[in-house]
Image (cartoon, rainbow, N blue to C red; front, top):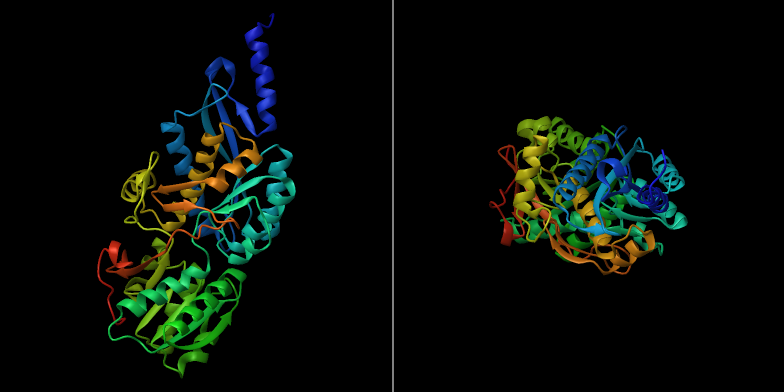
Length: 406
């Protein structure tokens, strides 16, 4: 069969688009549509699998929303996005290798892994390959102190995770506690969180105990707890992920350690925290990158409350901040693509550098290092098994319950 000029042109266009990681949908089925391929290496197995699966859900939700609602075009063709996933097994070397594999396939636009160690490894590869990455899972300030120019983090920096809870306790706890003990996993992210929290606690007049460190991803933090038991701290603040956070609450109970409050990073906003611990989770404080009451809206997700209700309908569980930050990273990438009408990694990098949007996730804007230093964090508390925003006061859903009562 003889090729028509239209068919030949479509083949040439598809070949050119592939260079930028864009695959044209076959002309016979959708001649006026192009699909932009994003690469996402996330931990679907290993120690970060729980957070990694939430990250994937957030990416997937964004993809579905954008493809259903977008009217933006590239080269006169309707834009769609596709996300290709690879499991990095929670290992930084695999997370980095997967990005090189994406690059070999011409995929230059990347959505990050979860976990600062993974994202740190990826950022170096992104810089080398001249890819462009939006980060939804690596908040460690150290990633952004290396002069990288191609990684953009939608989250508040790691140094704010514990600091936000210290500020909330100082402002809202009556009577105000005196002593605050810091326990932390020994990974880079958790250490950055801890140092930021200790600095804030000292500045606000607390007596700081610790820090005591324990191995990352451990299910036994009893040695660290025993070291601070005799001090009888008013607050135990843990820089943890899910497994360590659950272990800390359980083992404190077993050891008879009863502070006025537990406060933790990462773990309490995960839905399984409350269901796993049951009554032991009650009144635990947590820092969160997002809640359903944060301010801001845009054309794809609307307000935070819209995101929450629609996510629940789609996935059958409440949205966590891990879901929301992943959707926000995907959103940032999409908005940059729409701004440039291109999938060229250099043009996307420039557009991300200039991005400033009030979204369902709050403000998304990047400083000169690629961090989002413009978005505050929120503090949540487990109240009657529910994740409730208690700080800042302006968006609080309920008052902070104080002291910690069992």
